[in-house]
Image (cartoon, rainbow, N blue to C red; front, side):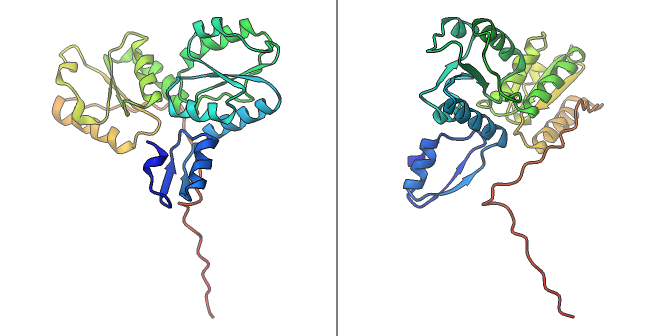
Length: 261
């Protein structure tokens, strides 16, 4: 969790949420070997923050205060950035130059919770600049849209994901917002039989953006073997064909083969 926990000269992995320049500098000073696994979509937000700060804008970041990604993004331009979490925060917000503002968003938020905040920002700062492309992660958005699509047909939603995963928690909130009971669990062993009463005929299953597929498969098997859910229907709204390269430190080097004839 903290850089000081890593022995000097050791190896550290920066998570997909990214880190601030201060953390990178400290890692370099301590001669740490770094594997940078920052998601390219988070890097995009960081670069936008740096660009807007250089242009003299006040950067209004929409996000959750203690989230690792937000901490890293704020660290890219600490003197130029302010954080808002709610519409009420926007209403209280005062900036040096209301005519030179922009907004960025944490990539793992829900579309629903950002919509009202962005609208409030537009009302308070009519000339506010938005990012060139939406900051919310495509995988996060696709899963939220998928949950909304299947929720009317489901009696229960189970989300595979970590309890400290922002995008996983948003999936639960999205489904609860349309009146369907929803639960977040690490794996199939956390299923509570009380959730699966006689009234539950259809269970919807989804997963956070970083949850491995085998955890979903294990949950499906548990519902089939232990609770009698024998029919499976896979709902695909969008094919995700985006592929990101491994960090350079983990990429397998290409070998050159010489054939003597």
